[in-house]
Image (tube, rainbow, N blue to C red; front, side, top):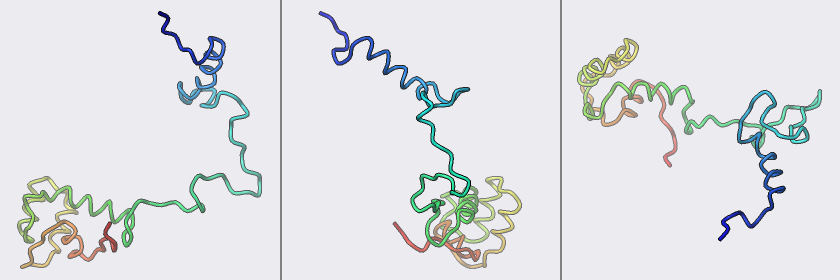
Length: 138
């Protein structure tokens, strides 16, 4: 019993393998396109460059009400506050951050927290420091 491919002949298989070889091998000296006609044409002198983003607007991935820098800074703060520290007060959060080798700027931020308040989440800590959280929940 022969177990070959019954959909194509050897000649068509060879042609198909050449068509996709550039895509399989990745970008090299010849680029990732096999045939020159598959290359995208450059934009004209008075035309904007091609984009795959609808409407030309890029999205940062940040939730509404926050910039991508805010998201990164809140995430950085959260890296040094473990779940075992929450809920916690100012002193407990500072001690936990120091135990986790938090940089001086993160500890300084936590030292700005008001005394006598217990925080349930990193987002509550972030808001207490005067920063904005996202305005919409998914």
